[in-house]
Amino acid sequence: MAEQYATWVYAVVPAAGPVPDVPPGIAGEPVRLIEHGGIAAAVGSVSRGEVGEAELPRHLRDPQWLERTARRHHGVVSAFAQAVPTVPFRLATIYHDDDGVRQLLAGSRKGMLTALETVTDRTEWGVQAY
Image 1 (cartoon, rainbow, N blue to C red):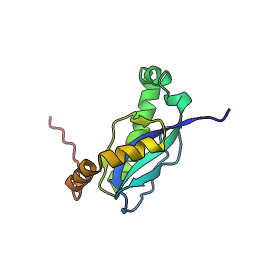
Image 2 (image 1 turned 60 degrees about the vertical axis):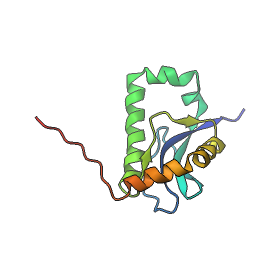
Image 3 (image 1 turned 120 degrees about the vertical axis):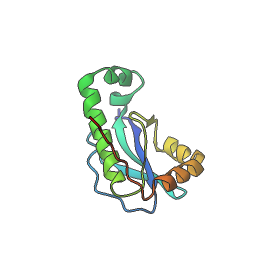
Image 4 (image 1 turned 180 degrees about the vertical axis):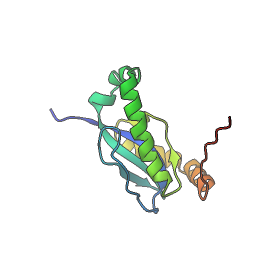
């Protein structure tokens, strides 16, 4: 039986923007874009054996898995954010397949375009005061 994959969503970006050089995704997979209506989701194909309904809760309680996964997720989001307006998605935003992501993009297109417009030409800063 062939291995089945789920679609892990990293962020939404403008479809017409340049695609930056991004690190591999959470499972070492290449990150790709799913486009719809002028926006695109940056996604990766991840084994359902890794992120299935039974496996994911167990992984989220494993500090080593969680740290590695969070760092890789953040690395992909950061690479996009340095190059194009980016709306990041929460860790472990997973769809059964690419069609589910297309439905997300179709259903939230207006809100995503507004969010992308809001972050265009903006930079996020973190400040610590002692």
